[in-house]
Length: 447
Image (cartoon, rainbow, N blue to C red; front, side, top):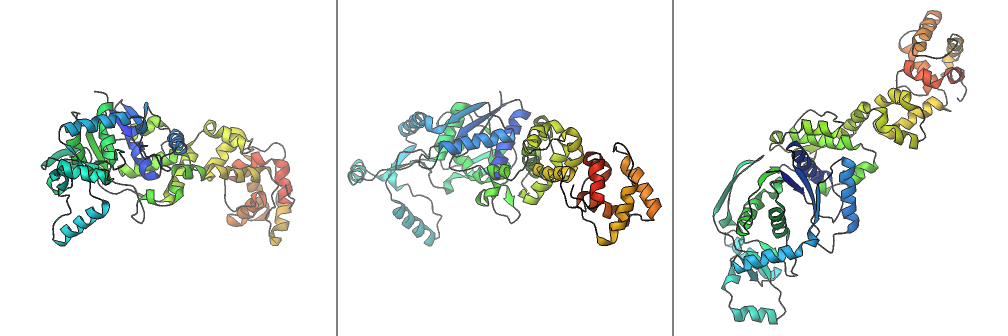
């Protein structure tokens, strides 16, 4: 059987790193097993779901390289949920309840005060036809609950291991709200069953729902998929990322200049507990993936780690991968420039700084005590074309002529030539700066 996984975001906002982590693992599992990745919009919340958010989710997944083999929208499948609900009603497994939220709250409070678990008492099952009619006449709309078989359900999760859950200790879940809209549980189970989802990979917070959904799948006549429940991605403070800053949204990270490979590399490494390594191609990402490496430890995300990974990704990218974006920034140095600059950038926009250092104008940083030294050094600058050997030849002559060495030799030259105390190797920068600019900067000109 071909593996089919699904990522089912609610288009009521942007996708954050927490649900991006789940999307990535689903996509990698599908590709690793030769299966398919289903993107399914959970847009039954018609008041909050928007086309703009749906398109934004698609754009974010595309930017990350997570393509989908199939696309569905739950809002277009309401007839299937209606049909499933009707089937459950006919089986006596879906029953109407008329308690208001306030009445349910009082019941829960009374149970807790009595030292009992706040489990729904199934009072609605005892209503007569006349009582139900009276509620309807008063304008009350029922919500519908799924009648659970109160047994212990056991299964083995692919990441969380052996599980069991006593359904005698939980309330019959609501499947249809008072407004007639199905809740996530019903829609998700019907979709998974009818679409043939074989592997459900999601956050650990859904683990308590699994036993209920297994009974619902069975009642509707669907096969049971395999499951993998992953620890939720957290910030360093232990709080869920999806509740935090907008910069944790994929669109926010993209706006800050992060590379998609930095996002996917770091998320995979955090999930598997590996040492962070930049993974440039999607094929390599799939090769590095192993669902068996995902344990129960909570992966923690820090933006500084993402920045470090972003730099490492850029250091590994070939010129062809960034050529168009460099050109858009007005950088025309080609592959020669990128080879010099890439190990000194954290974000691609940092390359602009080094292009400006090369082409100028810059203000040379020359200490008053070094003016004479710079004049002498400029007079020793080799004639002809500047090559990769020019720096070594020149500084050897300057050292012999002035007696300077080490930091007292190299730091003043770097400050004069680049106005920076750090950066790419000067032997690599000099050919790009060119002889005329080098001489002008050594003598204090703005060039």
